[in-house]
Image 1 (spheres, rainbow, N blue to C red):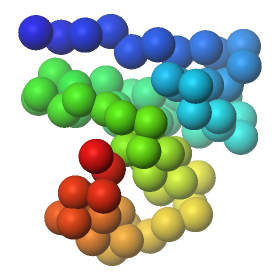
Image 2 (image 1 turned 90 degrees about the vertical axis):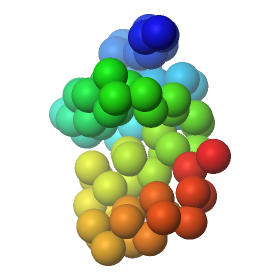
Image 3 (image 1 turned 180 degrees about the horizontal axis):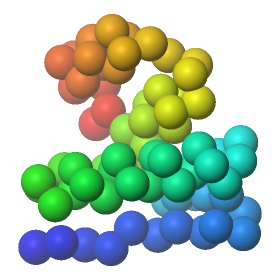
Length: 73
């Protein structure tokens, strides 16, 4: 069952995780939402990881490493 994601565009937050700007928030929200249709259940930690990847703070290789290590839980 799909559960909606709490997004506050005025404060640039998803599940109370702060985003630096609206563009990164929207890019991350799209990625999170797309994966939620496949059964992904986002946590504050996973949202932070996706935010950092979208912002260019971590590499694709680091994102894959974190996913394999299940660091998002």
